Amino acid sequence: MEYTPEAGTITMFSTSWCGYCRRLKTQLDAKGIGYTEINIENVPGTAELVEQINEGNQTVPTVLFPDGSSATNPSLAEVEERLAA
Image (cartoon, rainbow, N blue to C red; front, top):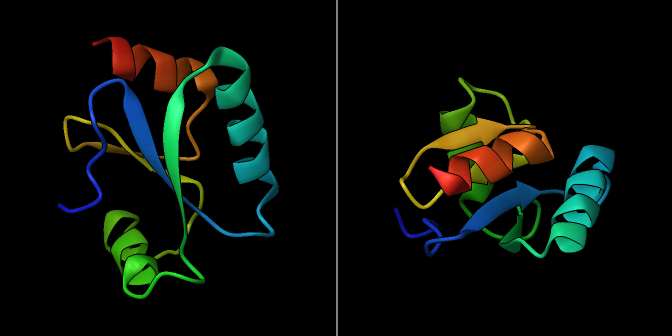
């Protein structure tokens, strides 16, 4: 998958109006965890990708991890745990 992040970082699919996305970005910034943010409203094909991951729903934030797995609206603790694995 072209959006799979490098080791130690995540890819976060978001929208400009998503409060959960803003919260997670703030937490990631505070912890120094690297991420690539992709706005599904602006990048063609990514809304459909998020729908595939989330059984037809455009739920954000949807996060991709370096191992190719994903999580929908994960907590900071879950992100840290999965990056450490």
